[in-house]
Length: 302
Image (tube, rainbow, N blue to C red; front, side, top):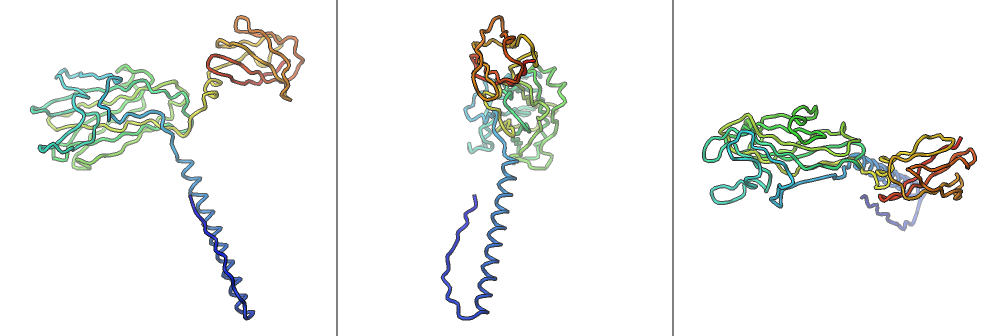
């Protein structure tokens, strides 16, 4: 936030020239304050526009990947999650606690290891949806670890491989070796889906060292309120109607209000329908009460 401090200065004027100078200086101060306030407002607006709300995250600090699905497709007995931190010969941490796969473990390995996330609920996500994660490889010359990231609405490997939303790259190669590197992937195309799965695959490399994955995060511009989510999934039809309204979910009770907010009817729900034939032709607001909460829907009686 921006703090603006105003000072009150007591000035005794002795000449017209001094008065003019003081007035001019005061105008400059006011203009400068206005510029500062405007710049501050722009900065706050820019930050608000670019702010992201965390939808889901796993930083692996609990060293628990029991909710992830792990595959050792090369069958060498090594996979993601066998270890969670690389240490040097003096047991000093080389990596943070993270999800790690090896391409060398006393002997050369040729990994094809997968780690598939649990279902990530994105049903409330709005605006821009982004996946972010951090990678790290060895600081030595054996740092060329190839990996891929796949995102899909299904957790099976076939669906993940077929996804159009993926990243494939070889890390290291003399660049950022031994240094954590931040990555992002745009997932906005999944907005409107109930859930996604994120998969990391370490493969097509051998006799290097390790691949570390950390701080896997899905974030969105904003999240729908619970009532908005319920409303999004709930439908009332036909609209307009002349006789009945039908619901696509189980409904406990309903109330009908006119546009002035007056309760005009509380029809009984029978077989997911209500009878509105007795209502005068007009526009109404229907309050629907379900086990998940209450939502309001405008409808037209014709």
